[in-house]
Length: 221
Length: 223
Image (cartoon, rainbow over all chains, first blue to last red; front, top):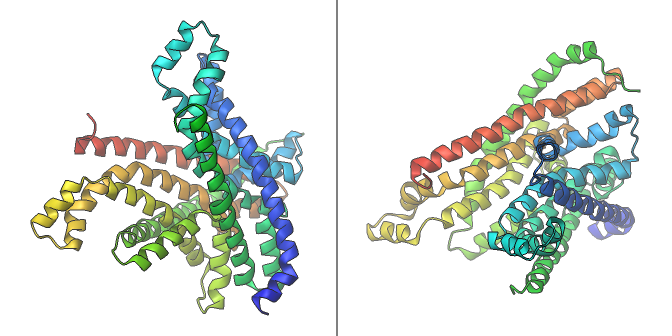
C-alpha cells in the first residue's frame, strides 16, 4: 500500500484523532494555567496552611508520573465516589500535572518583579489584590512567558497519554490502525509528524507571538 | 464506598517492590544512554560541517516536540520492519534514551556555550588539538554547571518509565496493572505505585540539588 493510499484510507480516522488531541490540549492548557496561577500565588501567601496546601499539590503532581496519575484518577478515584468521564479525566489530569510545574514558574516570576514595583504600589495605597492584579502579575507574565512556551509543548506531548485511558485521540487512532494493519511506520510516523507540526509550527509560534504582544503592552518591546 | 484493604496492600507489596527494582534499572539504563548520546548530539551541533549540524538540530527539535509514548511505539513496532528485532527492554531503553538525549544535548550545549571565549583562545594558543581542547579544557568546565539540569532530567526519566509498560516492560506500572486485573482492585496497587514514585523522585531531586551546590561551591561559582 502506498503512503497516499494509506492516507486516503485512514486519513479520516487520523484527522478525527487530531481534533480530539487538539481539544484535549486546549482544555488541559487552560486547566494548567489556572492551576499554576492559583497554586503559584498560594505558595507566596502569608499563611502557613495555604502555602502548605499548595506545596502538597505541587510536590504530589511533580513527584509522580503523569501516567500513574491518569490511571489513579480513572481507576481509583471512582472508588471515592468521584467518577469522571474519560474525556474529562484526561484533560483535567494532564492540566493539573503540568499546572504543578507551571506553579513554580508563576512563583519565580512574581518573586522576580523588582521590589520597587511592590513598594510603589504600596505607596499608592493599592489593596494587595489590586496590586497583584494591576502591577505585579502583568510584569510577572512577561518574565514567565518564555518558559511557558516550553511547558505548552510538554502539555501537548502529555495529552498523548490520555490514549491509554482510551480517549480517542491521535495516539489512540495511530495505535488502532497499527494493530489492525501492522502498517506501523505509516501509522506512527504520520502521528509523529502531526505532533511535530503542532508543536513546532503552531504552539511555539503562538507563544512567541504572545511574548511579543505582552512585552509591547507593558512597554518593553 | 471506598474500602482500603490493608491486608491486600501488604500482600501485593513484595511484587511491587520487586518491580521497583526494574523501574530503577530502566531509568538508570535510559539515563546512561541519554548521557552519552546527549553529548554526541551536542557535539555534532558544534562541528563546522553544516549538513550534520542542521540535521542534528532538526532531529533534536523533532524528538523534543513529539510524545515519548509515540516514540516508544514507533521504535518497538517499526524496528522489526526494518530488520531490527528488539526486545521490549531494548526498544524501551532506545526510545527513552534518545528522547532524553535530545533534552540533555540542550543542557550540554548551554554548558559549553557558557565557557568563556578566552578558554578557547588559550587552548588554541598553546596548540591543543580540538579533541584535546574539549576533553581537557572545555568539558570539565561546561559539565559541572549543567549538573542541576541533568539531575532534573534523571527524575524526569524515572517518572517516564511507566510509559514502557505499554510495550510490555514489566516495571512498576505494568505490575500494578497486572495485579489490578487479577484481583479487580486498582486502588491499592495504583496508590502504592504513586507513593513509591514519590519516595524515589523527591529524594533524588533533593540529592541532586545538594550535589549541585557542593559542586558549585568547589568550583567557586558560589560561596
